[in-house]
Amino acid sequence: MAHPDGPLIRRVVTAWLVALVVAFALPAAAQDPMPPGTVTLGVPVPGLPRAGVEFLTRYDFHLSAAALVNDDKRFSWDTHFGGELDAVDYIVGRTSIRIDYGAVLGNELRAFDPNQGNYTLELSTSARSRVAEIAVVFHHKSRHLGDRDKTVPIAWNLLGVRVLRQASAGPATVEMDLTAGRIVQHSSVDYTWIGDTGLVVRRPLVPRAGLYVRGVGQFVGVSAAINARGAQAGGLVETGVRLKGEKGAIDLFLGYERRVDAAPLDRQPQTWIFVGFRLVGG
Image: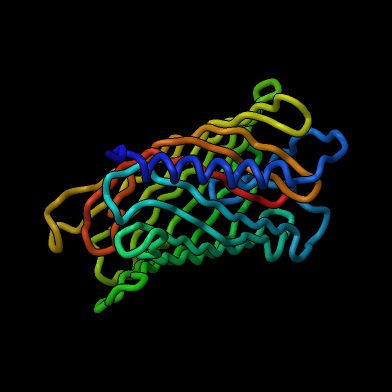
C-alpha cells in the first residue's frame, strides 16, 4: 500500500533537487563579502544616499518555488516571480516600484494544478534619516482563480507607511521593516487595515555563502459590518543558506507558515511546512 505522505515527500524532494541543480549551475566568483542592502523581505532596505539625483539606481528580480507540506489538495506549491526597482534616488530619499506575480498550485485536477494567480503592484516614496528610512506606500493586491470560474473581483488597495532599518552586529547584518496602512478600496474582502513586520538576520560563513533566519508577521483588521470573525493573524519563519554567484544568488530554505485567507473565497487560514529555493539579483 502506498504511503499516505508519498506525494508530499515527492514534492519536497523535487523542490530540493531543482534548488541544488540551480545552485551548482551558478558560476564561482572571486571572493567578495556579502553586501548589505540585499532585498529579502519584498521591500528594499535602506540604501546609501547618492551624491546627486539619479535614475534607475537599483533593480532586483526574484523567482522562487516552494513545496508545501499540507493535507489540502489545493495547496501543493507556492511560486513567485517579479522585480523591484528604484526609479529615482533624490539624495534624501527614493521612489521605488515593486511588481510580483504569485501562483499557487494544487493537485486536485492534475499533478500541477494552478488554481490561484495573485498580483501585487506597489509604489513607495521615502525619506532617509540617520536611524531609518520612512516611506509612504500605495499597495495593490488582486487575487484570481486559475482554471476555475470567478464571478466576483477580489482585490484591495492599501495606503500606508513603511519604516526600514538595517543594523549590524559583528559579522551579522539585521534587516527590519514595519508597514501599516488603511484599506482605501476593496472588492469582496472584509479588510479595514493591514500591518506587516519583517526581520532577517544574516551571517556570512565564507565569502560566497551565509546563513539566514527570516521572520514575517501579518495582522489584518476586519470590518464587523461585513464579517464578525475578528482580526486575523498570520506569518512565517524561514531559515536557509544563501549561495552567491557572479551575477546573482540563490536561497535554499525551509520554513513554516500560517497564511491568512489562503484561498481567495474561503476566508480561512491555512498552515504548512515549506521547502524550496529563491533566485535573486546579485
